Image 1: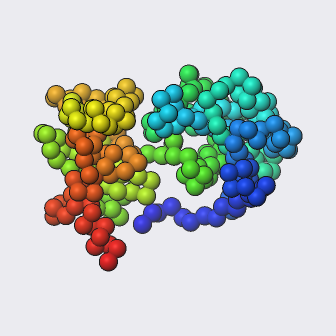
Image 2: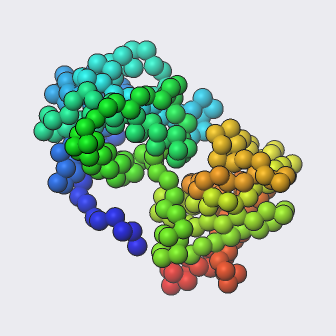
Length: 290
């Protein structure tokens, strides 16, 4: 079970369309989020929230269409920056931005939020980031820094509920020992360990992955090859003793995606991931269901 305390989100579907404007607030928090598709921007830009300082995320497809990428920015007011991106930046399809519902955020606060989010996204490596440079962390007083960190932690807790996981990392070995069975997959001289978590299948740091894909995998599953190559390029996978080694916990969208990358061949993750007693993930889940 998670040690994070429960919280309540209030989501207003402003025009009755679930894919339209959503105004999101969190209980006992002084922030507000607006999330909307790009094509709605012209009709929304006169809302009061666009005239406040805020930090924003732009999300859109990658060039190859395989997954998404993200851009983090800040603006004072936030609407001016989004206006510029609407006119000049093509890739994004949806936007979410955060402002203070009590009006007590200033330029330094939002610059700090931007810098922290970019840093977290770089570390998590869940999505490619469009930010070319890392913003400078502004100088804040101890009190201001504590205030903005609380705002940031509330913001981060909301993002997965809104379908944005770019800043999440694995829960680490403590979570495995207490909550989730540790699993392993082996083959082709490779051993990897991981666990099936709510946010996806997490392969643990120190696991290995095959250096070369089997011919059939490279031919019939090019998306798996592209994903592996991306993990190599961003440093999640590094060469070690003729194999690739995971340099950090890595979250995959499914157990099969994780085992395919690890083993370098087509794989049914529900069968190839097993616990210490040799039970497959499939049999574990069937036992849980019964």
